[in-house]
Image (tube, rainbow, N blue to C red):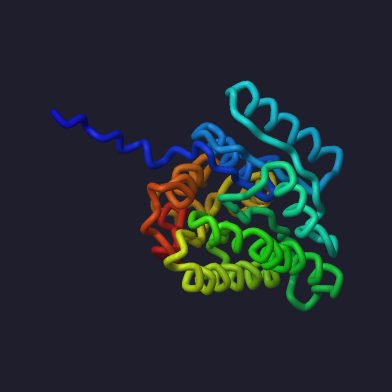
Length: 261
């Protein structure tokens, strides 16, 4: 009798190394822990403040308690050499990166008429420049080895921009365009590139905003609730494992149906 195949085996990440930017809390943390639970070695990234070191230490303790492997890396992606330093340090520690999750971003809420050059530049540096530099540093190696996964964490803002998030929404739209462009260029190499677009997720970043407008917004979400960071783990595992090997150039909405109107 032929044994029944295990449908969950393709989701395993044994032997893979994953870099998840901005993974000391919330969505990045949830994805990093999900990958570690599936056997991946995980690079936990943060910008380097004392608070972020404490958060990262908690993530590392959780990974270690589960018998998984993780390393902490501090790099300010707004700095001129932030992304390049991060890529260099992770490669030095692990030898290679098989999975790249672009999660770190900055969202500064203000009217478009009041956006300063400094605040514009900071958002662009973290949300876009670092994305390009991490692509350049890590994707060619994936292509040479014949296997890789790139996942950008976008937002419904890329399609439904909030008036107060002029730069952030625009950067997410461009990041999505870059992901689709790269997906075409890496096709056939064993590397897939996809975008995961969360909707209204209850995180520290937007908790105050949700407290003000939450009930009105919730009425526009067909599933009737806000998302949780854990809601992104399953989709991320699909797109970053062998289970998603035939998914390339996808924009997967995890928004509870919000964009249905």
